[in-house]
Amino acid sequence: MGIKDQIEQIIKENDVCLFMKGTPDSPQCGFSMAVSNILKHLKVNFKGVNVLENENLRQGIKDFSDWPTIPQLYVKGDFIGGCDIVKEMFENGELKNILAEKKII
Image 1: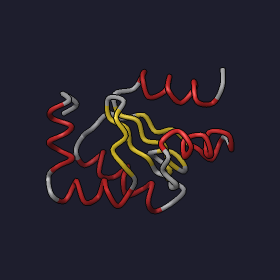
Image 2: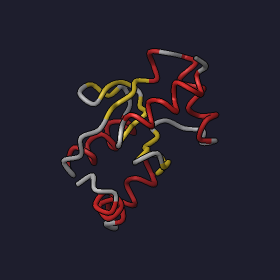
Image 3: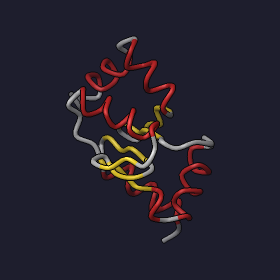
Image 4: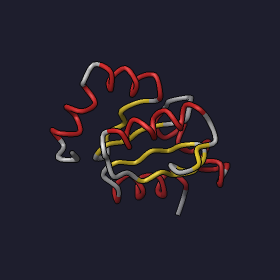
């Protein structure tokens, strides 16, 4: 199975998926920690995928989304964005609305 197929499978199997550096309990960068904390604050059950464990995955997710940075948040298969976008959407209530619409919270 190629890396693109692996990524598609992870996204398909998890309603909320955060490709991040480190894990939700032990983030390895401030941006990953910020997004993880936002999801925890909203009481979202999400899968954290540590891209540091696999260089192919780290590059693969950037190619997959055509987005240059990590973390990357996916909700029900849709790419939401990176740290700045998620933070802004959280602050203006948009993230909560999307999560409610998609029956996550």
